[in-house]
Structures are given as structure tokens and as C-alpha cells.
Length: 74
Image: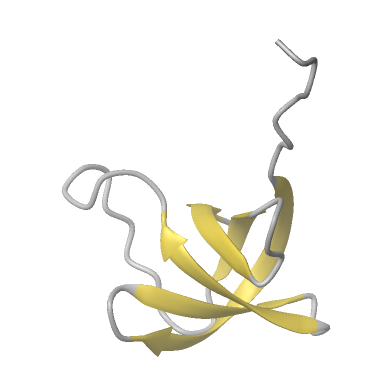
């Protein structure tokens, strides 16, 4: 092994601004910038419905900070 470690995702909180096609959601992170996110986990299990205005917790991609995964509602 070369000793490289996998970058861990950054967890932030945001507000759902818009529902997009293909189960994507646009989330405003603290009013500074927008992130396109999808719900985490398999589609049939533990489905959490999000609507505009919900506060959610996101795990941002370590390589692209404009993409993320919804890990929970607040």
C-alpha cells in the first residue's frame, strides 16, 4: 500500500430549495452556495421524503463540493 488515505466526506447542514428530476434536490448550504444532492441509501429502504424548506444534513463529496448525499433530516 502506498499509505494514501481515502478523503472522508464533509458533513454540513442546509435547507432544501428546489426539487429536481431524477430524485435530486438543490440544497442551500447556510445561504452561501447551492449543492445538488440525492438521498442516501437504497431507494426502497428507509425512504425519507423531503420537501422545500426542510433542514437536512449533507455529506459532501470530497472531490466535488457541489455534489452531496442527504444523510438525515433535522
